[in-house]
Amino acid sequence: MTDACPPPFPWGAALHFGLGLLRLAPHEFWSMTAVELVALSAGMSQRLAFDRANLERLMTLWPDQPRQGAEHGSR
Image (cartoon, rainbow, N blue to C red; front, top):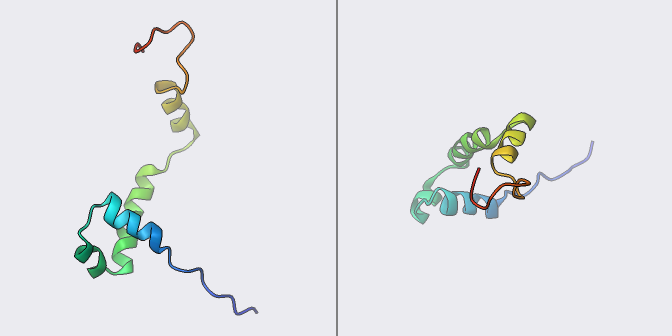
């Protein structure tokens, strides 16, 4: 059995999520517990998760390159 240390807390990602994406005030962010922050982020990960079928649908709706023969700005 090894005495492996747990990975450090991802403060950069937590600050970006809380202050940048959620736009919490600093006092709101720092008054939260880690459990509350993780609970907020869990909802985001479920909304952002998608399977191959959804990816292909999005790629069809918004291709990186214009479709052959399509005029600029038309769908």
